[in-house]
Image (tube, rainbow, N blue to C red; front, side, top):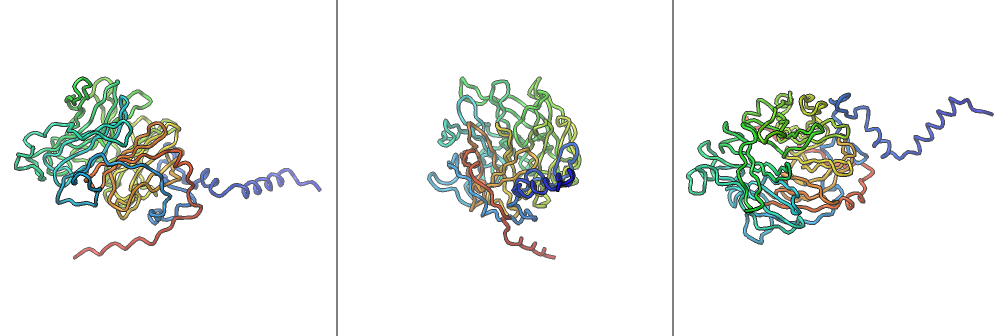
Length: 430
């Protein structure tokens, strides 16, 4: 007895579907809401997999697979030889805003170093170098003392608009030169009206950093520029009044260090309280930007650009959990994407590494370091390894070396990593 062709086709499809592993189905079809910069920019999907519970904030973050790593401390405000500790904001100073690069055969790290709590009067930027990413030179100052804001100033270590501070903003390799970016403004709040982004050029002859001037007035970036397909550079921009004006992106930097156009992300001040954006170039050359939400929704927001950063879709809350902390992502040399973040919405612990095949949906997440306050990560890829700088309690600069092959050998759980219910919000005092 013969089976009609159309019936045979149906039977074949059914059998095929039963043979496909569930994880494979999910990888190819993360639901009808799969994001796309042009056709579905409003999608909330950013995290998916058999291990992901429906409520992504209830992931048991302590049970994430652990990524093997080597660890080193670059700088610590505590006594020499002491282990990085939990936050002690009353003493010791601050080490934060960590950045890495690899240039001229060496690893370079930079960070904000100041008195007391972060970003007070007198804060400067320090740097160190390493041949292997684990053994670092003695830290040195990169920026000068802010005007009238040194240790001998009565305003030193305070929050006031009568003193200034530098904030570390990352390394920029441009035309064979190494530049270090730093913002400068009054230290009363975030940020002062004289805010400006400045550059310092490394002088190979003297081993010192020369002032290269202003990159852009009324601007603080979050990460150094990346080059677009157009040949232009692009980086994020927040103005001193960004809480009402929202996030912008600066495009340019080719003809001169200080030649840029600024383009707003509409909705970044109304849909959320956008902080510390990061972005990357997708396989189709469209752009994806992600934002920390200072309204404490506990999720990352995302926006897309299909015209090289000139216009952006309205930021949308994704299902990717977040502790309201700085994030760092990049595209790997093999085409995949990584994101280092604090995904636990309750606290900045642990620091985790997430991996995506397409820059749109992340399907793996690994535990990096925790059991204490860890934040402000920056990730760098070099010769098969990830180097991840982070701050321990805002008082130490530390680095992890993670082998990509070691991470690739780890499988995610086949069932949801469901943790206990989230604690109910505390009742506010009347």
